[in-house]
Length: 480
Image (cartoon, rainbow, N blue to C red):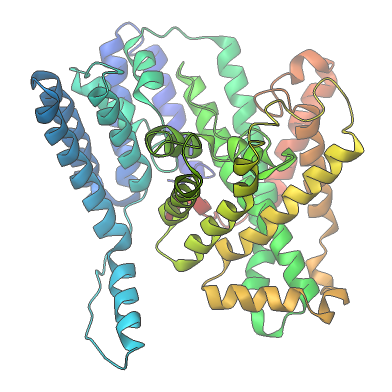
């Protein structure tokens, strides 16, 4: 059930009406409804993997209770490691087993040896990387006594499987979401209308921009043998726009839907393509994952407050694991390694926290220096995205070699210059630049524009969505 489908619209309307008009007098009934709706939502993908979601939820729920009841650090550590081992074991089997088997066979083959291998003929359970990390953060926080274990299974189940965030995040923390789940919620018109605006902006990014960009990107990357350097450059640029609008569009819809139920989820994007350096980019891109690795891996390893060798180790480890989290392919590891190389100089020079404020805060235009920094950071990011999108490392290097050839200076194919799409992309970044100090592009639209112009803008976005709507395309991050 895709966010950009009529089915989801009907599902959302039914749950919303039941939540506020039938179950509104009882918090317990509301949470039970959210849990049932979330499991139904997940079952629409593949009901066979419901057992995996339920098992993961039960595992961490009981692990939390056991850790709380066990005296001494040694006993608590046993339960913590058991939960981590089982969670990562399931993630490893479903997501990485075939990759390791194939990589082992290829490595042995380099020595002239041949081994018979077999692979798991099973699809990747949607959302497993996300709800696994929900559970891991919960048990780790209990172990370090940051939170108390949740004794109400329904409330904990909603924290893990709340349907707006279930399949592609944001990756929530128990310290942030559980208190909201346990607190009585009253319908807030202002919050709900802001949620609808954020959903509209997310759908615009996904349907009107990301999906049309995907057609161009697929044409370039899937038929690479006859393409010129200019076509590859165009393909890489459009993929950068596609993945941003696809994933941030999903996040906007998820946050908007949650607001309809009186819940605020963690922000996942903060205008990352306006970043002035790679460190700032990673504070603004997939924020919930970046902060997860920072808090549960990077800082415990010593962060940047260690010697030079360990500092390099920590940065490489974080970005390689982040790359591998995205998928079982060497391309993601190279993508992570590239980003580690990008950020290491700023870590050594202690400039990685230089740009904490949004660019050109309080001004209409950036300075020339800021503009150059944004352009340079975006260029490095686009280059790294080539590895993220390529089918193999060999293909990625082939694309890059073509980009940096004489054919870069040829005209790209005419059908790779869609004027209407380019206009929408420019409009997107114009809106986001104007609203870069707000939580989303339409946050303060009511306060800034007259009513007539505001509604004209809404209808224009709806028109753009309807005009671009075609075959429903899955969100990119569903495969992770």
